[in-house]
Length: 303
Image (cartoon, rainbow, N blue to C red; front, top):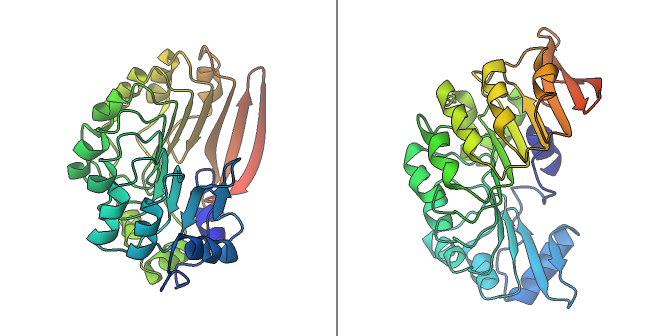
């Protein structure tokens, strides 16, 4: 599972867990039992603080009982749920996790619950279908410093503009579904990842909306992918971001002149733009810009 997820998301997916078809959490008795089972499945699934208390849990197929047990542990600060197969009972338990500062969740219709966790600093909604109705929930999370909404975009008009109340945001990863490999999409659907249907037809934001990104004045890192109406004109707008240090552009419409444009960004130290090389061979080329130098790297599209 992890290998395919990493291949799809590339630079954005956190280190995660095992296959979506596992049932290793069924019948879990208590939190100690949960920790034992997760550690047996993945050595990266549990992390402890300096006092030995569990502060991070990563689950790929969270069920109601597992979320309820985690909600009772005040030491847990970070939770990853790649695909929570739970009912409203489990989501109600998630809502009670007011100690969480970091959440990775891949679940359709999760935002009404997640929006109650206003203390969150990091939120990753990778491959979670987002509709316009989700936006009022998302923008309640005004304490966010890191937001990842890659592969989610069905949001329509005025959505980027509405997100500019994230005044503390330091890192933003944003993108549509893009052109994904058929074998990977088939894998997701076969294993119940309904969000993969997002990749059949996603919508670009309105081109004028990208201007709203300039309001995110605390932004230090920005990654944009699979927006085919983001070109040189939109790229030039980012010059007004005073703290932007790192930039990555993939499956956009920026030209080979992109490095000349970003060279004028006041705080930028490194950037990458993936540009097409051979459409028949399905290859793109990573142009890596570091202040005072540019290097290239050719890699297959989507890897």
